[in-house]
Length: 177
Image 1 (spheres, rainbow, N blue to C red):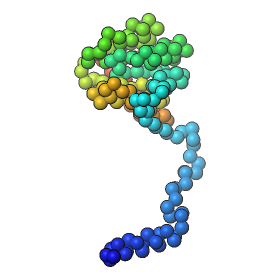
Image 2 (cartoon, rainbow, N blue to C red):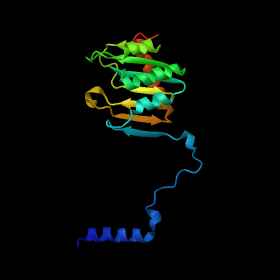
Image 3 (cartoon, rainbow, N blue to C red):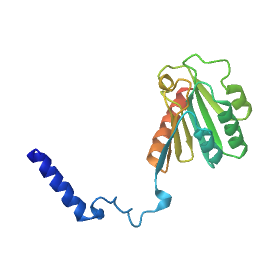
Image 4 (spheres, rainbow, N blue to C red):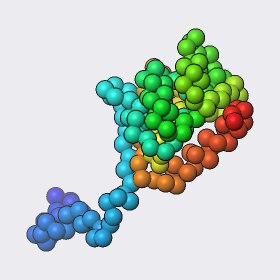
């Protein structure tokens, strides 16, 4: 056995004898407020329910949507329902790339949702949904392909604020009122 291998074995044996507390994970911060805890999760493209739709369904104050070339029908229906519940809803469509005939614009406008669209390439890199203080960020179109993988963030007000500022900048540039 080589000398350094003996040393590693010896240190490992000593640490094991020191007790399981050496390898234990740290205890949660005492006094941490669970209501202020942040959470994040990734939803694969084969998820049974679109997390963006779930965020919209749970919104109470506002929903801001940007970056979709065509709003998926389930998301459009959830936006309409949110608007009917009295939630402030605004949407910016990214029309810079070629999409099919359906964009959802007429459906959203008919529902009374504030709508703007832009054809400026590169203005919107990836679709996102802000529902109150939660953010759902989709993969950029060139990476997502036909899939709809989404990352969702709850309890991170700075992130929600950053995306909100970006949304209103794009909304004004797209001619939204």
